[in-house]
Image (cartoon, rainbow, N blue to C red; front, side):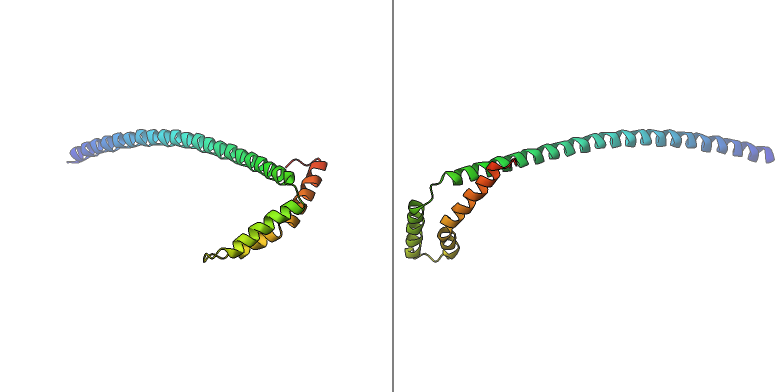
Length: 134
């Protein structure tokens, strides 16, 4: 009986040992797959970071160019009586419009247009005369 039990224990030990080796191999394979997946994910994250950085640079450049274009366009507007007459005419026409729209923000903006133009020209002159590139 002892020999049979001992033999059963040896067989059982071999089975358990074999399963342990199989599990070790499976675990090693899973570790390699996870490591490979992590490396791939890290590469993809790096690529994404690069794309975001490039887009941020492009956006900043576009904003700078747009700002330059707007300031240059405003600078080219001739100030004086003509500008005041144009804005005054637009104000008067908007006052006559009988739509249910509140035009007060537009009217306020148009009424301060000559002053705004003067300020923008002043800012443009200061920026142009300095070494700052916007």
